[in-house]
Length: 70
Picture 1 (spheres, rainbow, N blue to C red):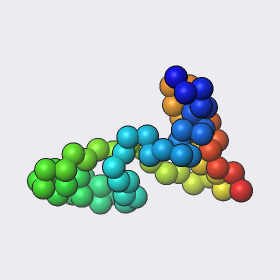
Picture 2: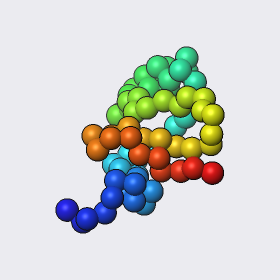
Picture 3: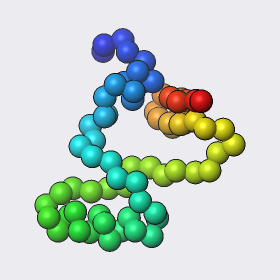
């Protein structure tokens, strides 16, 4: 409705997330359990993969978008 591109929205806004934590796949379940036990809603929203180039690629309902490329 603002006319802003998805790329700009992801750069400027946190897209509704209060906080993001990057953990190993093994650590995530216990971290989420601890957060939930303190009344903090927690969920896995994505993952990080090795890449050939330093970039951030988001897969959204609008398709794939590179939001950072060095």
